[in-house]
Image (tube, rainbow, N blue to C red; front, top):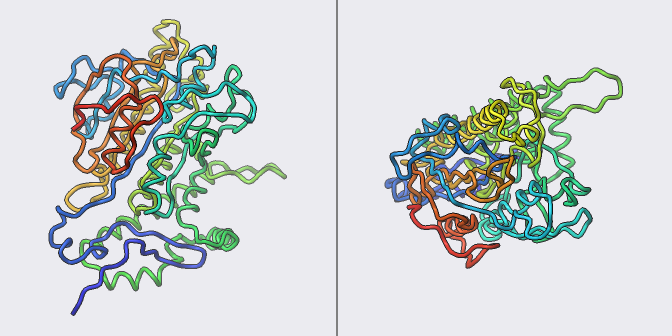
Length: 447
């Protein structure tokens, strides 16, 4: 009997639903199933942005190389240490004023993935440059349902003056499809979830969602018949993988329901609440789980994730800090403020650790999803009090299909363009790019 593998773009379909599947053995020829180690898995890229700089004394390791000790702020990464590379010495020159005066927060965001000097304007004539994620999406995006996924946890305006004469579009977006087109992020986990599993008919999607909510159905209930038919074609390992995938989806749905309940309002005429959790940590983790789901099902291979906009003055009451983050970042050397910044920095790294551990938990052949991901975490400001854009706090996580060796602290020469890192990463995912923004070459020593 001849064997016909399942198409990689197989979907489970139901009313208003098109559920993508994780990469299964049944989607490969029998020869690849017999030798999973030789199978080539998709390579993913993610870029995570955090605002307002760091308490660098608790961020930068004292030693270079593999023998370094994780500083206080990076301690939450202990369980995934072998996947994490700390990069020192990188800079974003185009986030500096360069004659344009104040506006470091806006510039730090606009330049973070572009390496381009944003035009100083609060009007419609915004200009930056194409970002590394969108450059990759132009070449890799055709292979997936969504060329890229832009998510975040803090809304941002696309117009108006947000920082010393710079448009709010600069402060709110790290992803740029062109020099004048920022890619707005989605901050509502429920809307991200609905987008991932939506069918082509938007009207039908709305009706289907209303029906699920009315009858308290799971998205999985809509594809039961198709799922049962598929299971008859799968082996033991694929059935286990599918069960883990479905379990993850059900867990996300439960958390989305809890988030909606936590935001319920009873004031007559009040707007229906979003599916955004009241707890900021849960909000980040829900979005992280959505990112994992999108990578796992190969819905996209490129994503950006902004924990917050730069200049954000959010308080972190969940860890006992009622002061605004931006206010604290102007610490003036005050020990108490510096310690609160350290705590906020550590909280952010804890959420990063959650995402990395989730990626590590998803098996792909003999490796994991984290083995086939390149993830950059950092910001465009070093110390929030100095507003410097050199020696930036940057982590490179994941192994990029074995092209990156983690568990190290690499110190590059002072003022090395951060876009040199991006060129190196594009090489590793098979995207051709000779230069990007202010790049001057490629980083060495990553492998």
